Image (cartoon, rainbow, N blue to C red):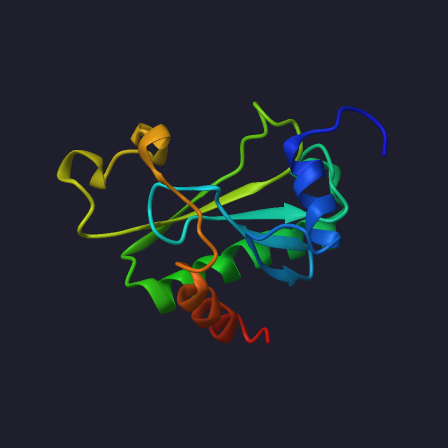
Length: 148
């Protein structure tokens, strides 16, 4: 690997080694993981494998696959969580490696946050991901994604 070792690089390495408990599934473009802080239930990340600096670093077919996988995760969240919409975000400013945030939004979110961007939440107060607590949702998402 060249360049800076980011959290994204470390998470992909841990996913490959079977050491990352937040892994939902291996998908064609990389790894789907639950977010470490579950500020909304079902918040997911999509990490490419191999890790690249940004979406524009991918060739056309790989780029299309990453975006298709991202929206497949959103479709699965819509089908399994009761979310009313999905927010998608790709920044890479803090962690300069491609990763996508896939964020379900719910009708019962606090009124002041329901239509706000997800970073309006106080993530420091969010529940930490717990594999046991999310086992049912993970199984439902895998069924929706047709991943065993």
